[in-house]
Length: 289
Image 1 (cartoon, rainbow, N blue to C red):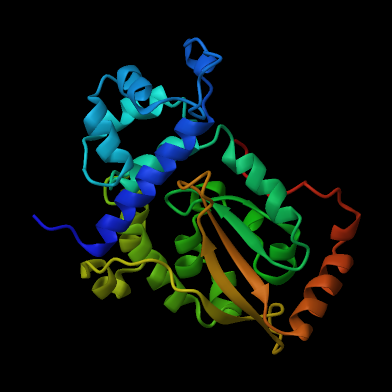
Image 2 (cartoon, helix red, strand yellow):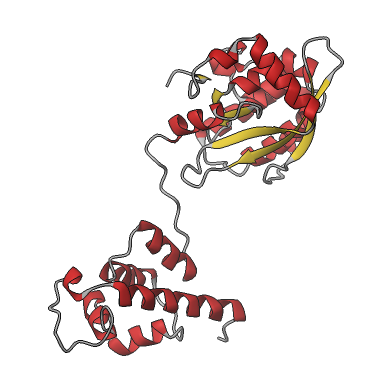
């Protein structure tokens, strides 16, 4: 079967990548003697082939971008070339194999510190089911405080659809919530996601059309308006995005970037009023974990 131009391009990129790493790897790094007469930089192709347990001709064709191969064989080549995790992932993905990113040991802890370093951008750290793990001072200065919600109900979609504070201060909450519901449907195998959806169906039977729908999709970034406080007419404007950290794909961050100077001024002023400026950077209110 003929290969497409894109496939051929990936083959050549893969071959060039392997060749570059072969030429950087010293013989003694893989237990081979270095001869004084040796002219080849790094390892020879036949040496890599022997270390990987493949034919010399086949490995030569691989570097030349002339063949496809199995994941098992590529794994052997990666081991022979002493590739680290990032380089191995790159090789496998060039060959068309999906490699999930391993979650870091404690992603939520690092994300807590990250969002607290955003003094004017309100942010939530969310888990796979959009349960709220942490929030920063800027969120409390501009949005309803998640700390006022019982821990068992501290789910972003639940708060948007069932919490009176969000109903009073966030007129556009349902459009955002609908996008997040579509996002949750991309994870149908998750027990917590299924539980959240069941709770929402029970709490909001008036949204039966939502629950019957099977549409899925990623969250759409948008600019939203939220009232500055209960009963206030002043509207704060934020460009809201849902971020997925590469090192922690099971965790997401909902962040609102102030869309105008008045919003920035309000967040700063409200933060000072609540005494946030005196708090040590890196501290963040969160659920006990």
